[in-house]
Length: 195
Image (tube, rainbow, N blue to C red):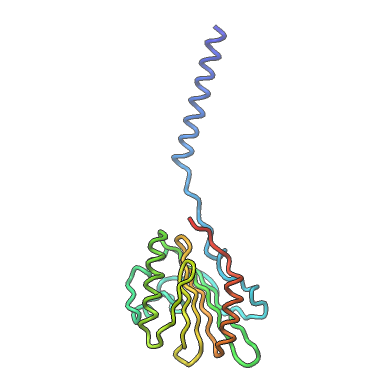
């Protein structure tokens, strides 16, 4: 009799554990991705810089590259505006003679394929603007260099990692200063995990 109760109790315990594990899996939420702010270029990379702007981005925000006004001249469609989350930081570096601006924009898309398509469209689009960019492939994206509309120098590192599109832009008067700032920025970039 005692053995039957032990067998019944063991069976109920196994059933309860199985039911609990099944309910946990059914109601468990997928892991929440880290906010993009965790992957933005740290201001500490340029300790004597001035932080001009920082925060979440919306598609209509005119201060970020993926807004309709910036995309229309490049022939890029609406898909690029459908990011789930955007975040940016702008730093100004002053050397006593001129300023160099460092921008880092991050965009999270629903999946890696969409992020990659947007990056490819941007790389092609930069070839269609009045000052076409020299483009070189790099791991996960492209390196672009060009003159800006005011005669300054512009470098862009355009990369995707998983569903995150990263645009690191350095703009200034002197090519050597821009290249040095870009080198420093790329070394300091936090790397988002690939999903």
